[in-house]
Length: 412
Image (cartoon, rainbow, N blue to C red; front, side, top):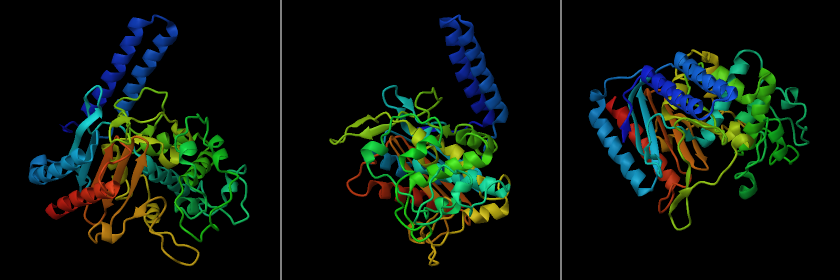
């Protein structure tokens, strides 16, 4: 287990040392001017990241020692029972980190421990990142949430079932289908150069419902939203997210999960064989679903993101209220989803008000939950997709995280 006790300066130094090490290897092995330039670029990138580090506020852990010990026992017991290779958890109270720790291994073969800096595939938590990008554009007057998507992406065909808007996409109300052929769609290895190109997967398919009438979960709906964001911002989707969401919030360990890139502290993704053995996850390329499930992040970056939604700053009060207000169907029924965010059913969270999102990916699982009235936020991520348990593994995993949150709330 590795507990985080470092602030932003230590993290920045780690980034610098890692890139400088890589740069030195390049210098020693190759003398060519091109790779020399790349080495210098790597060093400059690390220096820029260090300059932009926004450390999370932390508090004295002794105040929470007993609560942390109880929670650690529950979580590590669950990790072992479910045979999860590695996971990380970060907890904040009143926007100050009180517990941040890694358990198990980020890489089983190398015996690299999981830490609060480990970058995991966070699956559908990517959706609330994308929602934040759209909400910012709306806040700045650059995106009309209720305009037809063809206003921004004219190449996307109009559907006879009705008009699709960004607001409907953000609430899974647009009628865009989800994955149908898991083997062909979920395990894609093709590289798509732009989010517009990836629309070809579903652009010509009929809608599953008349827009606005029915909640129907769809990762592809967020693919379409990413194209709207790219068009409205005039930038590539990932570039926009880096420059307008992640960097301003100090989320310097978050970004697209590029399979062809070297990513510092990226967890190795695992899966489970039919006989229960832990195996390496299959190779995929996430360029077909950046917005709906293709980002990497750390549990502490997830806290950065959550804290930005607790009081006005990057987001205005009006925007914060917007993203956490449930949308309704055309018949007036609340769906429990705002702009991307899930409003947790009270029965799942001890009757408290809570918002968040879960994420499952090939080689990754994650959960981010915020209790706005109680001042507690919990972020957890693991490096395996199939959470093994006799029955209902994912639900059991979530229940334990909710239980841990309750422990911190009661001790607050």
